[in-house]
Length: 530
Image (cartoon, rainbow, N blue to C red):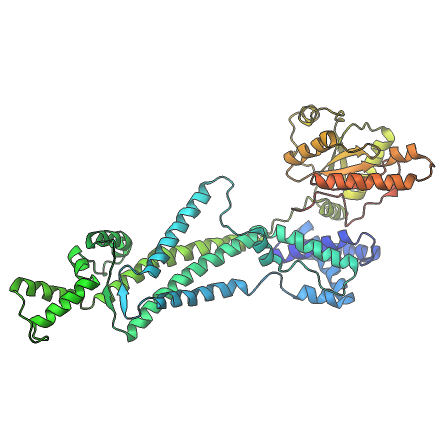
């Protein structure tokens, strides 16, 4: 699915997950949306003579739900119409860079072309440094190009992380969760778009400087030259030879330069040459005529400085075109193509329990698999059946349970899991959700339960859910007074403990699964986004 469809699907998931009490979307609303989506997806598939796909179903269902919410809540309808992020940023930054490049060139002397122009040398040198940095980043395994922080990427992706006012509590929570989740999901796409815009801005900045240089030359007679306290003519000639070699090689019509010409273009020498030329031609009465040899040098210098400004403008313009504008446009084009491809095929994880349960309702895809890793907890036959019921509620009626051997209390997680999983493949094919199963009656301990969760989190790419079975604690409490309060305290303790270890907990009752109905929108509590 493309970016727009994925955004609507993620928005609906966030709203349904937050609306566990059905305050915004009733059960009838959800069933009606699913039924209508199945019919619309079937019609769409019949028109294209293909099978009903999960993408088509999710697209139709999200449109149905969002349309109904917009009809009921005007504030939500206004939120849907607004663009996420900073849409004007992508066009404004290159335009600002274009004007900034023109202004930077204006800072220099507007009546001369400085062979050692600081603004122009800065443009070339900075971009060459950027190319080296990009090459180094590309060679580093797993390295990310760019220095954009999470805050900037989040602002560009979703804008301010604040839901509109005058919304029901569940809907406001859902929108807040959506924006936080979408900022993370769309980060690769936002990073590519930022890369494209930065490269375009760098090209525009250089283009602005070159255009300003040529534009001023239409109305101004440039005097070409250079001056330096520390560099002599030989060093300047070597520097400029290296700088202009690409332009001279690609554009043969450009005129080169010699060491003698560089010497005569030094501003202090030019002043003396002009004074000497004036004396030789009688322009300065009272001065003696120059000797013949010096007169020939003066004539050559005067001849060489005539039209020198135009030559150096062309050299700088061609050099910036080759070393800055063209490479930056190529890099921007590559980033734009990658961003367009990613926007057309947005990588949304449809193996999430929410999506797998919806896919099960239309018979799309393979049945979901819940892999359970019990810790110091042995399941009897009744609790095993309850575990299958929990999987069906969370992942769909066709879901299957993959129950692994119990990890003994206090044993090293690595050794215990390698025995249970043979080769410790936490991300084996076909597994939808991996869940650690604990007895709620146990007190969470950092050295044991925490180490177990940390090890699972490090070795599972999709994260780990936590199931807390309350059946044993309820049996033990019986009808004692204050049992409900003690159970509530223990649940809060476990949830805080799981949150500290980067995951979230779902309370279940394996003897009476119907006591905690896992809603369609919620599914199993998975690790929080970071």
